[in-house]
Image 1 (cartoon, helix red, strand yellow):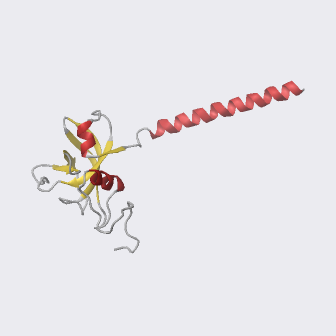
Image 2: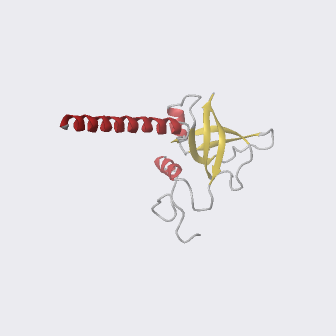
Image 3: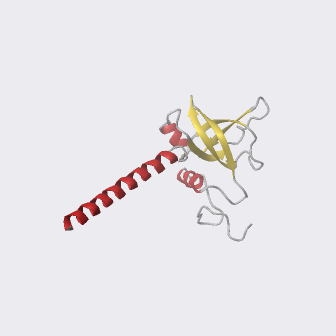
Length: 158
């Protein structure tokens, strides 16, 4: 009797381990397209990603680079102060999107151009995504007027 209980216990533990590994693999497989890594323009130019890799790029819209109205495609450059990457986007830009302002785009890098499928702009005058701020600080371009930056909008709502 004792060996039968021991054998059954080992079978249950083994089955639970297999179920855990299988569920982890399924979750990873399901999330593979939902994970987009962030890159600054300098990182994109240093190590260009594969043309099929979807990632996020962020920085400031380079002053004088925004071209609208020539076709359905909008063109501009995104910069982190150290490098600039040309971006194309087909669609309607957010209302707060303008030159010399922060943005984050999702898309692919093909033939030296970032082809964006989604563009996000800052939502008020004090907010910029933490990844963008960190990248701009590395380049020595970003200075926070209030001192330390934690990646969140101010608590006072201004």
